[in-house]
Structures are given as C-alpha cells and as structure tokens.
Image (cartoon, rainbow, N blue to C red; front, side, top):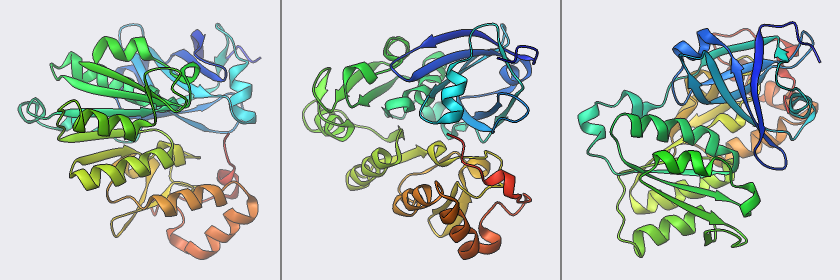
Length: 306
C-alpha cells in the first residue's frame, strides 16, 4: 500500500461483515465541515474518486471519520488499507450542510424530529443526531437493517438520541419489520407526533418512507448521496428531478425535500449508469443537462466508483 501521502488513517474499525470505519487525518477538512457534507477520497494517482459522507469530525485532533461498504473493486481495495497508511487525496468538505443546522435555534427547538437510518445511512444520520444533542435539541431515531449483524453505530447514536428504535426485516433485533413499520408503530401505538422526518439510506427505503410521510403530512428531508459517483457535478450520475427542476445531488444537495424527489427516475438512472451503454444513452438523451452547467464534462469522469 502507498504510505507516503498526506491523509493518514489514524483508526480503522470493521463495523460489520463489509462495512468499515476510518478516522483520517485531514485538519483543514475537520476544521470546516458540518453534518450532511461529504468528501472525495482518492487512494492513489490512478484511483477513482469516491464520494463518502462525513460521519464525524474532531476539530481539535484534526480528523474526519468516514464509513464505507466494500461492495466493489474500489471500496474493496480501500478496505485493505490499514492504520498508518494514507490516501493521496481527501477533498472536502463538499455539498451543503444539513438544512436543519441552518434553521433558527428557537424554531428548531419547537420541532419534533425523527431521523430514519437504513443500513450504512446510519453513518450519515449519526453526525446530525450528535449535533442536535450538542445544541440542546432532542430527537428520536430509527435504525433499520435486514438483520441484527448489519446494524451499525447503535451505541454511538444511542448516546445522542432521546430515543432510539431498532427495526430488522427478519426480527433478529428490535421490531420485526422495516423502518416504515416502526414509524407506524410509533405514531399509531405509542402516541408519537413528528413535524420533520429525516430519512437516509438506500433509495428504495427513502422512497417508501416518503410515500408514508406524505400520507401522514410530515415534512421529509432525504439525502441523495447514494446516487453520487464523481462528486463534482461533472459525470451526470446524480442528476435528479426535484419538483419541476433538474438538480445534482453532489452540487445542489445532497439533501432535498423528499416529497419532491422523483425516486423512480433516480433509481432507473442509477441502474443505467452501471453500464457504458447506459451512460451513453443518458448523455445522448439529456444533452447539455446531463451534467451540472457550471462543470465541464470529460469521459474519464464517467467511471463508476464502487
């Protein structure tokens, strides 16, 4: 492994079978980042750019925490790096910070907020829940996964959430069912009321959470970081329709009003983008709107990071 680069891995923990946490020495990023933002990691000169949500940060220590799932060639290679080794690039913070952080504190304190995390989405939810607690805002949180062994950051989130609920598809831990089943149980059976739901996880999960919360009349914020590839607006992978507007998750987000996101289109685009033929079809169909208007597109930027 290359160990002469600047962004040293100070800590590495395997959270589950294929999910890893790393603390990276990056003082300038740590000094300026906020919950909701992301970084781009590049392992070496030939490596692909990998956008990863900022899970935590320590401004005094100058470290930034990332969590990733080793599901493709790039992230599997990243998982082989050990403490003391380093990455070539660690760029950030990128994207807009969580909109709740910019809400006036007096208004925020009046809101009943529920965070809903699916799978690795817990890594994105965690810094927001932590920030809320540190700023005197009490929030509830749901973590959902297929089974108990895939639940991550439970202890960390429990430390900061007023109430933490667990849901597993197979019933191996917590409520048997998905996160929507848990939301319904909290509202219908436990007398809970929420003004805002923040849902972060796989797109299919966020889609169905938004369908439910729209029926319930609850404002819902989603993070569209799962569709990001290049992370700079050049590749066009994260092009979204939000309401009647074209947006790009990496430049305009990653957070959006979940009730305005066209999830079916986003899921279809994500599937097409995995093949060169699909990427060519999208570029031909969308023309100048394929990538962010402020960014110049290059073929090398259309590689899928995995």
